[in-house]
Length: 182
Image (cartoon, rainbow, N blue to C red):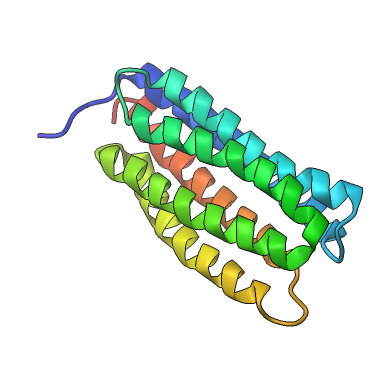
């Protein structure tokens, strides 16, 4: 037997996931346009992404209070906000340092997203989140490996955000079933 999450939570999550999709696409486009070097704009974008992720986790935790994996979401909030600080420091050391911090964050947040997705697997919209969490772990590892290579670039981070945004879109669309009561 699977638990049924109230439609108000599904509606709230669906709205949040559409917002995360839009943010990811806009952010990725802006980063791609500035990814050739660390400029004030690209640095601001790099720090903004995990800050936004943390805020989205706060909204998620509040909307699904007592109905979901709030401990995992609170861990994600702390990890994302610590990552924002880490990225702000790493930018002074160059792109390889940024890729290492981003890669570590992608791995840890991917595991967290995977846990949240598994806990919420009874919802139609969370299978894409499970896949996204697994892909995030792999992508994070590749960012760390890329940091050790010559010509390391921020451009792959834009692709990572775009793919993540598409997974949020898939989740939002699948959650539409829950909002309609199936």
